[in-house]
Image (cartoon, rainbow, N blue to C red; front, side):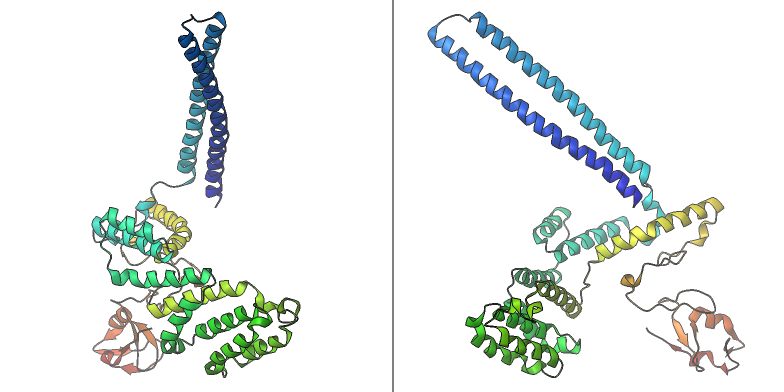
Length: 393
């Protein structure tokens, strides 16, 4: 973080100089243009009258030329100063950041350079779609000749269309989507549809007594949710008593809080992404955040490996040489480490449950087999290795 702050200070200095010099240049140019304009008018008038240049006009012309020369010299001097400041930004980056970050991970991670580039481009495009920057994503696809199927884009297009409507406080598209996906949402134990109806009801309440009858009629939409959301429905019905006095001055003023709109956007994004098989955060943003945590540790371990000349320690392309704690936000699936070999299980080395109930890795099982029999390392039960069952978390 300190490195970023140091570079940011240098960038701020450059931006400040750009702003200061820019304002000064504009003012100087305006004055010069005004001066040249007056001189041009005087010369045109003298030419029409057929008179020779007066001493005064010659002096004004000399002064104007000198002003232009001084302005050009000042511009060149300031440009040199800005160039020097920009070069200091580059030096600050070189000083605070390791330029050999790419060398931390072996090239063997990627099948080919082309595959690496395509994967990165696809991750960037997916991130842009997820952020609603559709035109930028389309432009990137065209310039990189990346072929993206319509089936890939469609969920993001629909998601952004509905979110844009929610930001405009338009619940129609979201309600239509929630009703059409009611059963899958119920299977996810989602309360999205109820929250949308609830927010629409509150929106009607905000209209005052004139909307009371419409709000009462709309309350019929709560009937399917009465069992699970009885308390919330009671609160909304109770608020009708204060409608003529104004909800903003009643015990139910919290219903008018604008935070409900931000909450419904988060709920819709989470549930819609879960239903459509998308991650709430783009893979690119997750990878970037994880990389910021992991890179310093990986650079340190790489330096140690090179110093001790033990290059064979880190040879697996799908496994890191050390465990890096990224926090609960980056836990996407269960992980099992074999208690015998102290290694994390994988597709090629899955966890195996023995008949006695203990779990070890496939590699550990193979090493413990003796004479066609396996003795559990934790209990004296002897068993056939073929009786072990693979566990899928």
